[in-house]
Length: 66
Image 1 (cartoon, helix red, strand yellow):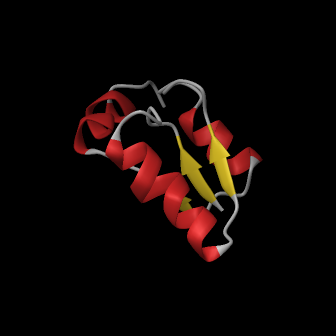
Image 2 (tube, helix red, strand yellow):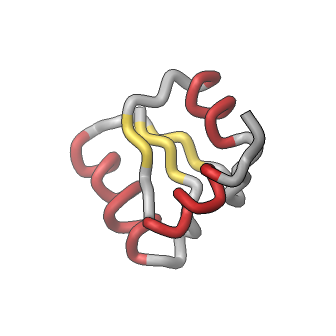
Image 3 (cartoon, rainbow, N blue to C red):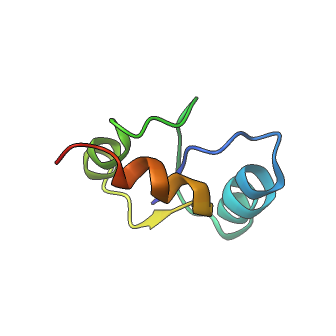
């Protein structure tokens, strides 16, 4: 299960994320908008095993309280 919180108008969110899931018959969870505070809860809730990621997201995730 791939978790994709990137905008679908961007190549990373669309072709790399959703496109590959469609091509290979995988399940994708599409978040309307990135939320650092909901990121890990969503991953657990939907049993995500893959995360669509770009480097800048790490900074936001690391700045969240434990």
